[in-house]
Image 1: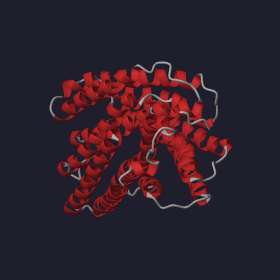
Image 2: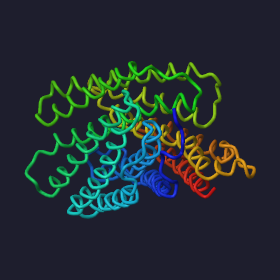
Image 3: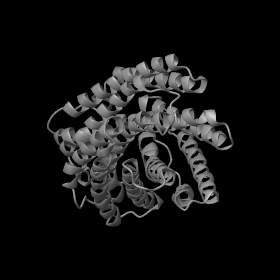
Image 4: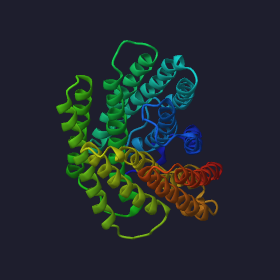
Length: 406
């Protein structure tokens, strides 16, 4: 794979994405103190937290990572690089308006949704063009392109819900489920699954799975998301159920692929990246088990299942890979040109290893306690876990700020 920095945008363009994502993650962990762990998932305070976490942290992180890694993977330059000056601004403005709408005045929700749609359209147009004109066309690149379609569909369904919250005479539930499935399954999971088949072998010194193996995960996830969305909007419960089964099969097969890659590592080093990947994979497995049992009738497992999926899997997958992606990008763009003229730091020297360990221990401890609290419905235990998550988020923010200044 060509890892030339010539294909990726300068860090000065992408730095705001990582900074906003770090701040959003910290704020999302702080807001946990003010949530009722027994509240319904439709409650405005819970929905507001979910959007702060997903848009401010997860989406901002994915856009930043894909802006850097996408062109490298397909060996093509960005066509509309200037869009990235605007995307984080529009996404941040939309997020603020959405939060104000959820917590203060619902009439602001459509305006926030329009800003979000603008940001995602700019990202999708540039990313689709970049992937289409690249030299590589594999199941991974096809999953990236397809994820953009589900991203736009999910944002449009969110815009529709914003108008429903303001009195539009449409049923909320079909759009609610299609919004969640399109964004979490069709965009986030599909993209993370594809990128993991590249990042895990690259950072973990392990063998890649074949394109045909990942193609099975991609095709089943695509079919599952498409059927679930169709089943939600028509509505037709059988289609929705079949789609969920296909999505679960896709994730189970993906976990098996991750296991194969981790067990084929040539040099086993239990650094913070590897430890974070272990937590992410275990969280994904438990989340899928809890959600499967929920669909079989054990309703108490919905909250811990979704929590492990969002904070355990997505959170640790993103934060763990930051320890590899950020030093890699900073070193290539700031220190690589100086290699023959002066002494430069090694990649691992750019990361404060002690702070990284503290971040991992606090965050993983917080994840364990909050998940246990959701299982036994104990608000005090949840607050203790949230405090650990906040401390971990502070360490992560300091780490990111240090890397961006280095």
